[in-house]
Image 1 (tube, rainbow, N blue to C red):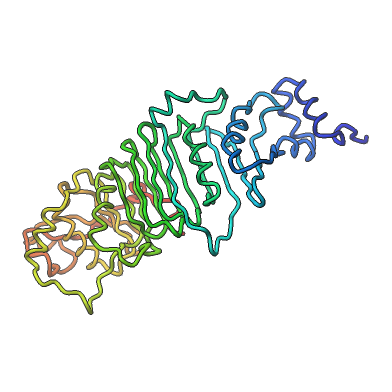
Image 2 (image 1 turned 60 degrees about the vertical axis):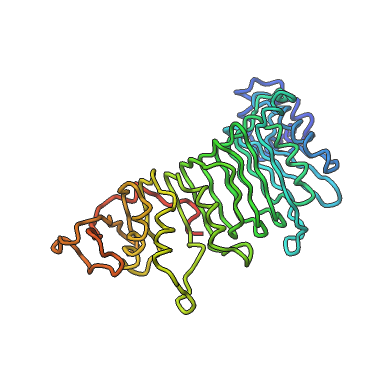
Length: 380
């Protein structure tokens, strides 16, 4: 039997679906590829870059999961000569916004400021009525053309808790402020970012991957999870060790901390320490790590270097954390502190820097990988 209904125009098919109960309407995706395509068909509009905030707000406000004529989760907005925004409403109140890449090889540099959950904005602008409230926002490939429109749009997402910024070429400096709700911030692969200003005292998760920028935090965060992936090196050649102090303010209270490649490397051919006593005093004045629970060591050539690092860290750790090692790539031995005179329990010679009452040894323990799992992107 020939299928005449599937050949009807989209407008008529939408009208047919709208007459069905929701439970029956959703079953039409199993009839054929044509019906399934109809449910995934994006809403397409055209306008200017100034129209982006109102277009996205209208798309969200019009969404109704239980109305077949208003439950389109995909939106494409063409603006300017080549500008294109692709939006997807995902489950659990997530919004993905992907802007068209513009001259990634030689992008125009720009600064970007985002203000979230400002109490003044909350009183001046009421949320647009909708069944879909944005709590998680993923922004990809924002550029100098779209950044201002995005800032205007994001300021209206009053319930936003999670913000992810990915692949914004040309972004040179960024300021993110949230006085109320922002809990998680992720910034990945923005190759031109040199300055990052963060004002969000409730922030609990901070993940960063890319060239190491100049950090300007306004608060001492109490992060539950922090990750700094600086394998691409510093963002500018004048980066000094004192510039890292602001980073320490960001991560000092972290419960879980992942560092991918240390920012500074010692050049043994030019390294000079004119006054070791002075350096020791400076270390003793550093902020103490009071909440550190687990230390996971990865990428060391041998156990001597792992023990050397832990002996250096002992001066700034106020508790005795669980120390795990993966130097052999398979198991996770614990590194524990033992009295130096207990020669029978030690598995390796005493390090040169440890001249005190304790040293370290490794003890094999099974199933420790569940205590401190890797970040999903750590192997990238």
